[in-house]
Length: 189
Image (cartoon, rainbow, N blue to C red; front, side, top):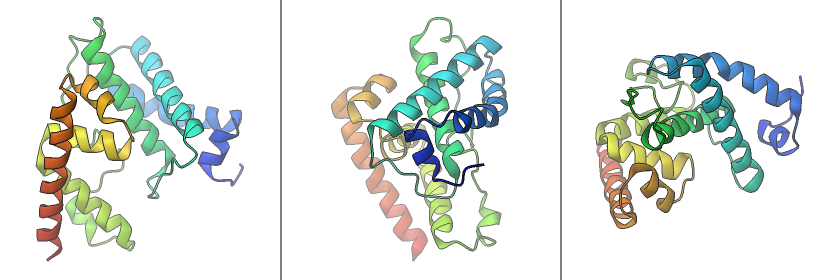
């Protein structure tokens, strides 16, 4: 196995790494979509679209980085979830399918509070704290903040995806980040 940076492998078009990612994510994607009422055809479509969007984002944006050790797989799974939600909102064959956001919908390696004390890495502790605080903010805040800051989706795209006006999403992001900052400062003190 090549020990190069995963993003470099993607940018260089490494087919072996692509196949490895595809097979690693296939099971979790299948479980995610089938548990929400999808079928195998939808699994294939969503997995391909999610991988494609992630690869395009990595290739188009040289500054695209994944900050934590949560891995490329976690980031791609975020794209897969985003594609699933978009399809459920816009495509008629998906619209009747259950799309509630569950606790682990954004990061497949989400850690629970009890595990925080066992973490050695200070950055990982901060990430877990922030994710727990984001979960407390509610569904809309979670969607806007994760889409904007994690997936680097533009506010205009988020507005279209969530069926809100651009100004509402802009204001929502500001209010949510203000609430998050306040909660984080309280938790840190």
